[in-house]
Image 1 (spheres, rainbow, N blue to C red):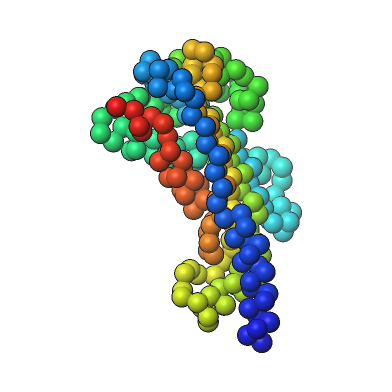
Image 2 (cartoon, helix red, strand yellow):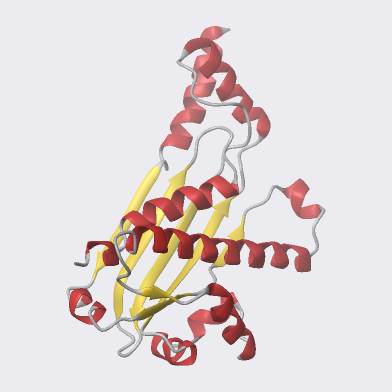
Length: 224
């Protein structure tokens, strides 16, 4: 029985582990020059797509799902504002961050929803918001694996390996974010990250992990 369980769980773990971490990042050679003229950056609400199980989807109307994704998008936006301020401006303000409430109020005045942001040029958004740079992004969370699968992995972990977590759904996420120069509209920085969390993870943990990791790579951090 132990061998059979080992085979099954190994297949599951290999499948989950194959997408554990991947990252693509680009920083424009023009970033340092452009960033010297940046006084304020706006972080726009993220376009979020939440992966749910079929049983969860059946209990939700399209309007409820949209409201959930909108709520998550603003949560990510706020999380990035906090992490941005804590990391970038830790030793003194290098660039001011427009309050997300002000950003969202201006977008609402122009009747712009998060999923519609890509329809506007970065320079248009920057002018509209009155900032020198804009950060836009998206977040997709995959539906968790079934509790049964996660529990099977947990059982094997508990019996045959050092303990690493508690049983529960396993989730994964992908985030894409870009920083544009407000004056030229040029892309200055791009970060694309896929992250799989361990047993017991949820969307909140995915958001927290991705924002923390992305903020560490923020090019403003390296400015003197």
